[in-house]
Length: 219
Length: 219
Image 1: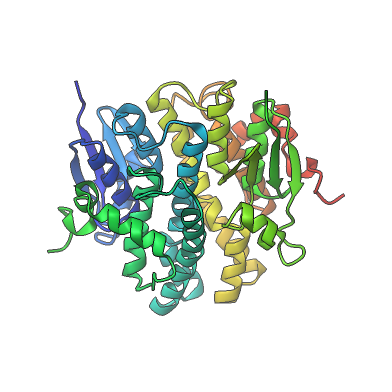
Image 2: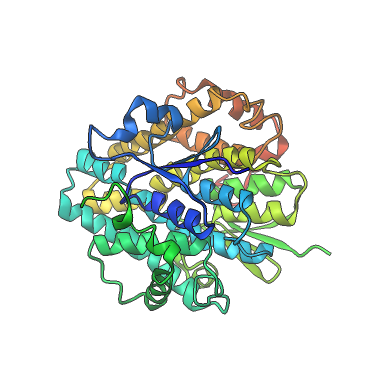
């Protein structure tokens, strides 16, 4: 008996994008409930949503009577409750490699370029769009330089970030590459990242999770 | 046969503090190698360290021939390789609750107040110490408001963040509370956080991990 899955999502959110890829890789059906981050004063701040996620951030997954927040928590939860196909390798050292690749994006790139952070540097420091772009590209470059080294120098890197099946690392990487393109970053210095991104793009699970494919994307 | 553990640490790093607590909770002996983030142009940028961690961030754990980076990856690795006492509960929903509490700190508070971010807002926006304090307190408050709600409203909260044994959530929370005090934040609005922090402070594993207890702390 499978319970119904509901994903509170925003088409262009990197974090929701990760969870959509995980759901697709697992072959799980889910209902999308769109939370528009820019309309109505930010629908993530509406009382109904705040009751689900006091952080007022996207995404949240509802699985029957359970509410799971934090994108990488959701992905680990899906991997534990629906183990096949696995999104982490079997041995502890390889799992650590994948989680570390994941957290370069999820802890050290993405949180610095969230909508709320861009709003904050505008409000506190008067940053305009150009300065916001400089800020974004600075942090993405710092993370991608490390990731490129970690990927290019390891024999464990395969068609994807870890071997020849997609893992948690890929579902973090691809939304961050999408985001980098949105900020018009040159990615020439990151050939391994680009190669893996292109390999992922050939998979339906990634393609169907793209922002433009979402029901709440602008027409 | 246990391999030797070496932790590359800085006494005041929140992320290293988390790993020290995990090592202590597991009763694991380890050698500390101090990496001074502010001396010699930042020892985390020295070639020997960059070879271990291309992110040039603290901490890194060396376990025999393996190098593990990213604090929460290290903690998950230690929990998988040394399962007792467990730092995550047994069932998937509870594990998700603990990981989500963890990631409020590890993804949404701490990365915004890292040394490199404070250096960056100084360089890019001319932020002085007072403005850096405003920035820090803003993000800690945003995260602590959510955490306080998540902890105070759940029957799963016990003496610690999840039940009556310390978990990954506690080893993230305590260093963040330490950091908040350093930035002279009023914590009166967060009584549940303060209660759990005080409970943790009674445990040797937390006390021995405190910045002031480290070999590289200033005398």
